[in-house]
Amino acid sequence: MKPVSQKDLSGCAIACVAFILDVKYAASLKLFKNGQKKAYRSGFSRREIVEVLNKAGLKYSCKYISNKTSSKRYKDKTIVFIKRSKNYPMGHYLCRAGRRWMDPWVNIPKITIKAGYRRRLPEKPIYAIYQLGS
Image 1 (cartoon, rainbow, N blue to C red):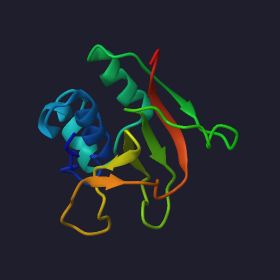
Image 2: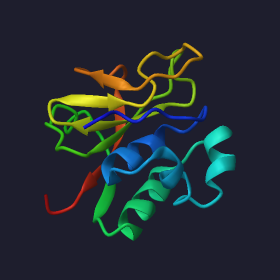
Image 3: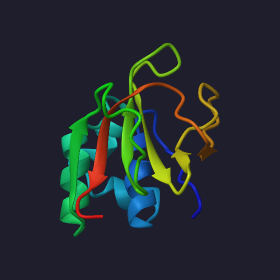
Image 4: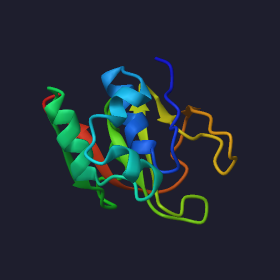
């Protein structure tokens, strides 16, 4: 599956949802309440992402990732939120795709945003948004 680039500064959640639903970024953006404003400024909470995926007919939930569960293998189409850091001052969402992670801004901090795949997460994950019953 082709990776989805985020089009906004804080649009990584939108790109991950677009990737899971196999829709364009613009279509995914319309699914979020105040999507355009939040994609530019504040980003999205894990609860908002779960709500959008569930309204799209999927069954998703979220959980905090503790040290005990961090080594667990992630299932396909799981979204993780990585902790805030120097390179990710607002944190960042990535989506599991087979044995890799779809990163909506793989070349951060470059201004020309490019999506791609990476083998490992660039920072420690703190939340997982996962599909139930799969």
